[in-house]
Amino acid sequence: MARIRVFAVLALALVAGGTFAFGTYRYIQNVPAKTINLPTKPVVVAASDLELGAELRGEDLRVIQWPANAVPMGTFDNPEQLTGRGLIRPVAANEPFLPQKLSPIEAGAGLPPVIPAGFRAVSVRVNDVVGVAGYVLPGTRVDVVATINPTNRPEDVVSKVILTNVQVLAAGTKIEQGDGDNKAVQVSVVTLMVSPDEAERLTLASTEGKIQLALRNPLDKSAPATMGIKPMYLLAGGLPSRPVVARAGTSVPRPAPVQPVAAAPPPTVEIIRGDKRAQEVVGQEK
Image (cartoon, rainbow, N blue to C red; front, side, top):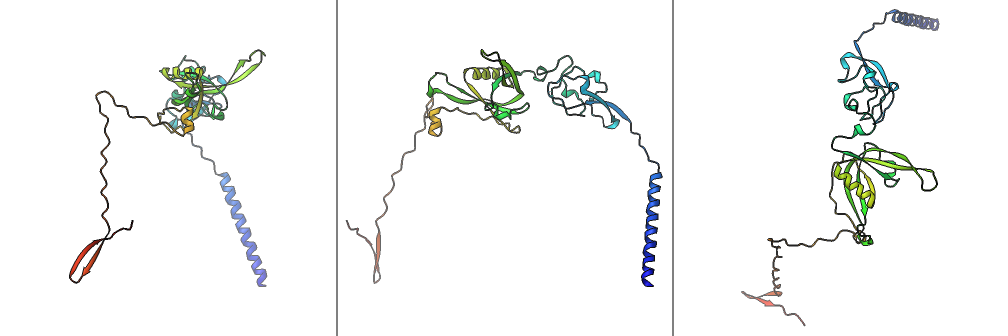
């Protein structure tokens, strides 16, 4: 009898719980959803990822509704305002276009609008070794190491860092005509942003010798001055010490005179005889 009573209480609890849960579910379903109408503004964003130097076309742009109180300053609301302009910085998909990422109106697209005033873009041919196995990409920074033989004598070959902390503007391949076989050959090219005097040094180094690109950490802003290295010093393990040369009107400091070292005193023995003490020199056998 007690067992029947327990099962009856359990069944009643299950029915009561199920009825309560079903009633709560129906109530939530019938509650009207509250909609919040936030004011929005149209904003032109990128339809896909766009690279540096790209010319904006209609299919690259789309308009979305952006909360009016969170619209970034300088955004555009009409795609026609951006069509035909170039990018001086990459833009990700769904990112709004801002003036600082666009080239000036009528400046065109491609590489020229990316070059700041006072700088030049110089391209040099590289291979997998010179281009650091493909890790030299747009936006990275490199040092340029030149190896030149000014006298055509093997002992005069010198390798030296000629440019430091140079920004890479572009990296890719171009097609050149092969020699005699009329076949196209792919040549890797890296474009560097340099000042006019750096452009002269880079051009001379690439035409009169060989260059090597050294990839840098973008956070490293140092520009160490190096003396260069020749084969004879490379095999010797370092650079020769520079002799001190006196200039006109100056005197070379003389070394301090060497002080004579005093001889050590001979060994002695103290002898006590009654109330008298005496120091005797210990003789050394020859």
